[in-house]
Length: 132
Image (cartoon, rainbow, N blue to C red; front, side, top):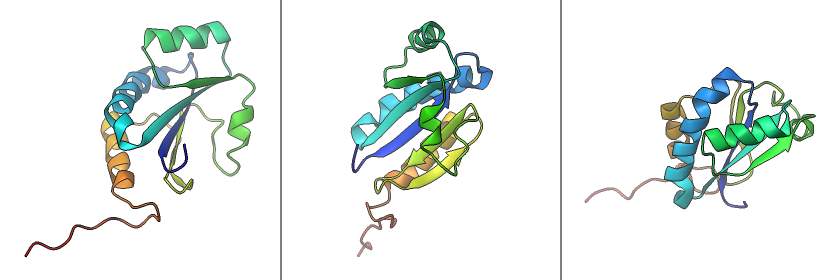
C-alpha cells in the first residue's frame, strides 16, 4: 500500500457505534478506491463467526483482519488502537495523519480524506497555478 492513503478501522461486532460507521465507511471506501485510498478493518475482541456475520450483514468489501487478542493494535504504539471504534489514517508517506477514538461521521471522514488527497507525497498541500 506504499504511496496510498490508508484508513485502518478497529471494530467489533458487539460495538454499537461500529454498526453506525461501518456502512458509511463502506460507502466512502467505494467512492475513493480509485483515488489511492485503501481501507483495512481490524476486528478485535470478537468471535470469528460474529465478525464474519458483521462484514456480511453490512456488505463490507474492503479487507478486514480478525485479531481477537488485539496484537495488531499493539503495533500502533502511542496510539489508542485498543479502544473500539478507533480509526487511524495513514498518509502517503506512511505517517499517522489522524486518530479518531470514537465513531467517525461519514462527512468528517470524507473531509479529512480530501485534505490528504490534496497533499503531495511530501505532505505539502498542492496548489494550483494562479489564474492569469
